[in-house]
Length: 268
Ligand code: SAH
View 1 (tube, rainbow, N blue to C red):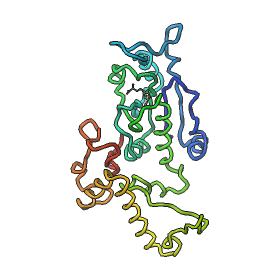
View 2: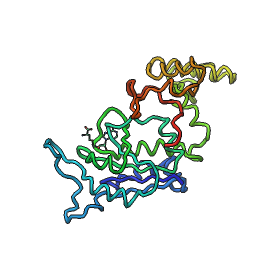
View 3: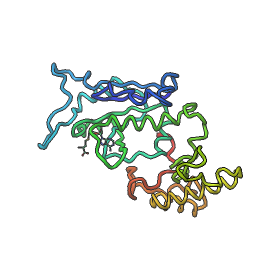
View 4: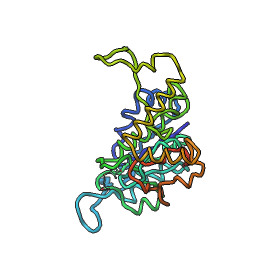
């Protein structure tokens, strides 16, 4: 069973949206578990203090290392990866999500205010992960996004096992456009090739549309895809190191969203 433990000041935000639809059904079915740990329960003073003013001055508050350390030690003493949701983190990718989904689960620490004491990050070896180049008011929505992306990849969660393999990012390309009935909507027909019944033509059309969309919208992904293709491999580079675009700490050297869509990260 895949286990998610979330450390948060707002446990009532969980399971939230993860309690409905695909993820919710899988939660009820016991495919995965969710444990929302209230960080405040690990404060020891009578006011249950979880934050304090920043050393060096400045606005806002910083989450205390000692309280968070106790919460982590009590709730997550196993060997699951421990991630800190953080705008300073390595941008989350589908490859990372897939690697996390293959493991035993995750421990996610949600920051609030100005973030958490740096010494806690080092002491509990938290890996900082970002869900994008924008600032949320807390890590909870980022944690919900990460868990949602992982849970839909767990065996048996998606209706059709195969539907994960072809989507945006899994192939290094954005997904082709989708259509369904009615055949004509406000004067627009479904592209003829999709209704003609020739599966080879459908495949070729989808491939060329996926390539066109990626080229137009994500030149960074397109460049990475082409360099993989030219090195003789499609989804996986012949030599993984040759197409690496992140530096030693896992950060991308190219702009946000570039490459790393090949599923070559191994287990987390
Ligand atoms: N002062 C910090 C921002 C703190 S936002 C800075 O400038 O870097 C408060 C919390 O929200 C963070 O500790 C983190 O847990 C969460 N958060 C905000 N933006 C995020 C993002 N893009 N990805 C993941 N977590 C995020």
